[in-house]
Length: 381
Image 1 (cartoon, helix red, strand yellow):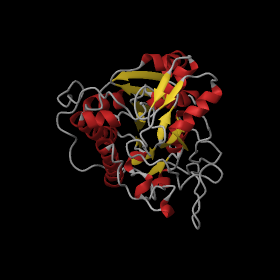
Image 2 (cartoon, rainbow, N blue to C red):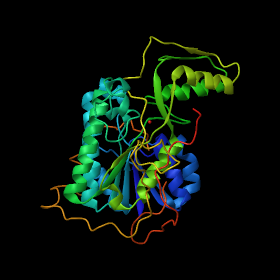
Image 3 (cartoon, rainbow, N blue to C red):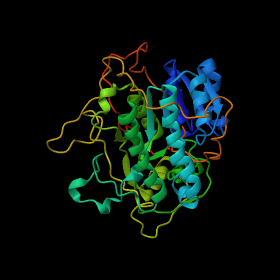
């Protein structure tokens, strides 16, 4: 039994894979253009527990072949064209983001995969200015206005959530996911938080760096925390998602200028230029979010009258999958590549290490499982 991570050699995927391998889980990293430099240490340590498969999420055949060849029982879908690139290339974004997600869910349905986790985003929300004071910080049930500067990306994430929910209800898949804030960590090269990595890396090397949006407030979450949260969703019992399937990661909120000051304190003499045109946010992303389903003491306080819920260890196997109506998709089989053509999934949500699953034959931890929140204050998905 294996966990397949699409976009698996990206920032989040590599971190998640490391955690899975540390638990003696089998991992398949599915990527159009594997970033070998990011997973070199995993390849050395993972041995035959780790497989790297070059494939295209635009091809249902590629996905089915990987699922069947590697005995995949869970998929974490992280391959996604990111925000700015989605604006510039909406046709590519539609093929990769919309059809790629559809292919992942369809491969899970046809291949008997038990659980699929999807990477949504805080881009499904609008900016803080679009919500009333009583709605902040934003919880998962806040209206989804979509970040104004990321209409293709954010709108695609709303569709992703609806599509995942439909596959869960119609076909009995176990589907859940996260709405990450801006994810940062070493090696981040693309996306909304690339500026943070550049700010830190160049300052540490003694190189000058300039950043914009100095007065914009951003919510940032460390990659290790996001990987831990995906782990919690991989190990949570199926019934946990009957009330809610998609969860905010939360994050630490600051302005870009405050982030630069933190770097200066840690790297005295750092040459950082902060520019600002008075922007209050970046691309309409609302900085203030939290998970209403965090465990007490691990997340933001619950609103008055609300109670936090814990993710408890599974009490048994997932309920049987409902058979899908009708015959399998005609013509889909080994060597049949007529569905190829979506092109490289160049951007990812964090490209993509988890604990025992709530499945027959898997180990289970005796400790209560909970959706972790950020625990660090420093500063692809």
